[in-house]
Length: 482
Image (cartoon, rainbow, N blue to C red; front, top):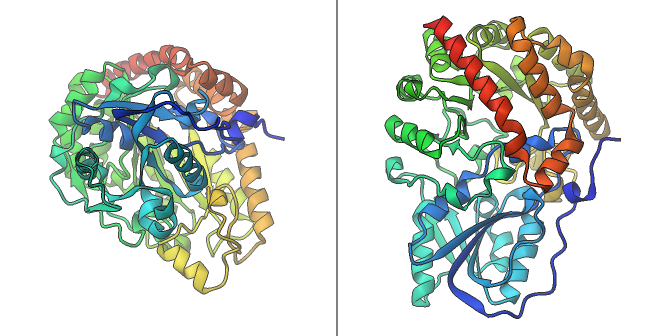
């Protein structure tokens, strides 16, 4: 059985509500606990902190005390002494139940609870009874307004904002409130918002979510990266490559920093080899690519604009030739998938030496076209949101059983995390092999170590030397490209 200790699957128990007085002008921003998938690496949960809450913190008026708490850092239940005047809770589908439990707990102590996040947008009627106010849409615009209304004693039950303001007006995240030791890097960055795709299974296709593709000034992003003082940054954009012309400008701004970074891009970023070269010269060492499927019919059904799957291998080679590692993301359980999809996907991943791969059981999120389709066809098995985590089959697949889909998901992770698969996917450049093996074994086969590192706040200390070695190696590699 995969290693899954209680603290990684069960939220910390909440004590009886405190009888301490409410502290005025104290706001707590809270990321609720969610159970971890034992098949995947625990490390992905502490790669970098959520930007949503740290950006909200940056919009908090100076006369407020703002603090941050992430239950997934295993530091116990969130603080209640003193009692915050306001608690802002991010709500996602899979941890909505925990978010509501936290909301009840804080409201019992006299706190005003504000719920925001995607689940509030897709299921507001479910969230409303648990909150003093809902924040629907762009929290950067809403949070200062909510705090002003609380000060004036006129809090409204619902606040809404679109995502159509000037993105350059958004402040840099308030990173000083973060427990840095718990994260591989606190330099989570966002340069763009939105994506040129509207895949039917993706949360970006949720009803009511209109998110035009917006871009921030590349010089502003470079300053944020430089100011945080860490050698490695993670872009959390949905698709950093949606506008190749913008990505090129961003690369020009990042190149002088001599730092390294990774980002999610669609595989069509390889349409232009010169852009891939610019990315490498600017410090890109890894990309997260949503291949989704190796079957064109699945990609067409999902309405994903992408090159043909037969051309994926050539495009992966182009990234590898420029020193960029590939983390391929695959969705399992499309309507054209049968039981052969698991071995076929694993074989392709090894043949093309993907350094990492991430797998998801297709999950119909509420409010998406996929959810409506599954509901209309009577294929939803239940609406227990805690299991809508891409690790469980919550619908009836067409060409296998739900049990077979879950077993295939478990099998493909076991295979890709095996010694033989890790070795088969080693880089062709022997100079990159030691770092690859160190990263692979630490990331993929060390969940017992990850549990200890997270509990004791040692993630950053252990990973920092490896990150710096990777940066130095990539700087040398850049010299060869120039």
